[in-house]
Length: 484
Ligand code: FAD
Ligand code: SIN
Image (tube, rainbow, N blue to C red; front, side):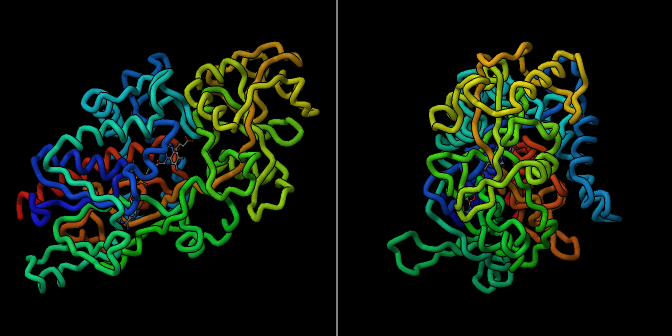
């Protein structure tokens, strides 16, 4: 295969893999570039699952429908959606509608065509129904399962070439492409691998950017757009964001200041000062887990949106006193045996890492714990309404609390997790310039794009956007390739 005839996909996370899978289905060669040593990006770490509604895996009696998912997504998007007008409003609405109305097909595509088990469904924060799909007990975590299924089938393809340790440093304009005799194609400049000195290489062709977000870019884009988040640890490795590469060739960006702080990153007692934390999957709360302050009191509906739960942690829990150079709070995540059994795969891993432990109510010695748990058990049994408004309780089964009641606990704190802002795209995944016009030969999908989620992304909707807009990008890049 000549790389000249290939579509160039930058980023080997879920968005890039989905675009590539579509391109290969049209028998179009793909060169995939990734700066990391191993493929998969943040996608491979995804822990709670992918949204879809309505699907055959959801509990049938809950009667989910696309319009309920649509309403939840709009509500969660908040002010950036509500305050937008005219073409911008229409663009955001169309992205949301495309995401939601393609969600059932996205889940079916992964399950039926890629062979991924998505048979377990949980309700995450801000959702009015259980619609976040992952594998059953003993299966791989969802990000790993999805990414490895796609990679395995691409690896068998002679038309697919993956180049890791290959960082894109610049996008080459169509004008430069014209001057180089490449027929006005865009291109990318890539840095030589370590040990190759300053050698750079330029590849020309249709480009699909799937380079993810900037939640780990602490001293770059985060400092520029959200200096107030300084000191909060992250679930993302410290890597720079790539939106500026596309801005340099005219792409517009939107909502760059909308950064998601997830309420529950694990605080490892052995490494309190770690800046990059393991995530305590939201599915743990979805399956019944609750959050407690330092005295053992609940303080929030644990299934409110991430934005709301994080705000409640910062307002109600005490800051951790240890000197770590980080801003962290004293919060415990607690599960009873019912919630724990439903989260067994996750829990086994977190216990093995020493991030959660099995104990009893008595051993925990938190002054308010026993009353809190009995109060919560009464809410779950329907004896009293929840003062915080929680209405979904997952698989919590503990009814009569004693000091011998078995529970599972871990320490958690808010973590910078996801960036809602990014390059502007339309529903065809075309990257738009500041006048709203598509930049020819350039598509983007996944976390690098902005505007779809507004001020809060619902858990499970990032994997979904990667599948939906990644596949659309692949389809449209394929049509462009065939035309030119
Ligand atoms: P990524 O998967 O991050 O891939 C981007 C790739 O681009 C990376 O491999 C990177 O190395 C490469 N790259 C970047 N810049 C360059 C460059 N200049 N040159 C070459 N390569 C480059 N979302 C959900 O919906 N459900 C979940 O359960 C879930 N769980 C999560 C758990 C964790 C711990 C984390 C961190 C995130 C989770 N998310 C979840 C969010 C979701 O995983 C990501 O937002 C999503 O996977 C992003 O996918 P992507 O393809 O856009 O980017
Ligand atoms: C999580 O498992 O809590 C992360 C889910 C997501 O980011 O969508």
